[in-house]
Image (cartoon, rainbow, N blue to C red; front, side):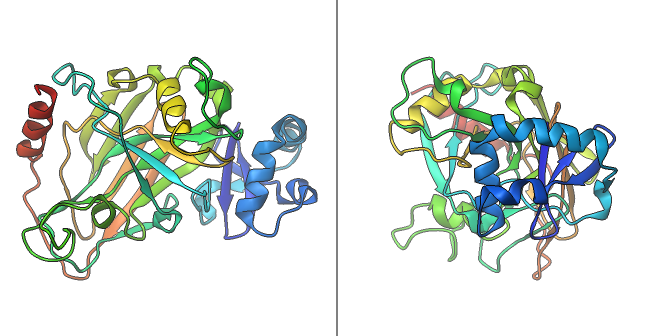
Length: 307
């Protein structure tokens, strides 16, 4: 089943013909003061809610999803835990240490939203197409082989990044690059268009990830290029921080094909079974950078793999 948040305060389910059916009234009796709390209650009580939603899917007409304003399917998770350098880059990089950083919920936007490039010095801003994993059960120090048991579902996720500059803005005073200032700006986490339950997705490593920028295919890679399994990622992070219902874990990306984002761009990410996440880009400074994928980033990743 596909769950979506829309029009600021509403929870919906999405049909196969892209109609969104409002089920806020079915979820409200669970009690919640805002949309995030309602979503968390639905995920926590899915056994109870699923039959009601399935009935609504068959009996309520809904409206075309194109006529509503979509939010991130998880509006305000307690944390977005992001893995980096987590793909083999088509066999060119062996598994590296599991790198994790956190992005704030304020960085989230839904499909149809706008990525706003901040007025800071940067070599460029770019896209990273990723799979988002949504947690459906509280988890702490998961045992080996149990990571898949706490996953509610999956969604598209774009990790927008400001690349380090020699000037001010996205580097620390000591001159080192900061993941926080490079990745945590408002609108730097497009996610959606909806959340798809794990049973509907099946094996996430069989999915294909694609990203188009202005109609040009820039990223195209299989999830089985990942260095660690999805279960490994969930289990590993649960030993560092307790996972709450609605938390999001992102898998990292295969960096082949990355290129600059700039003003008036239209970006589309599609992962099999997860729909199309569409965003535009706005830059008040109207900056521009070379469009070709920047090979030095890939070369640095490959060097890390040879250590």
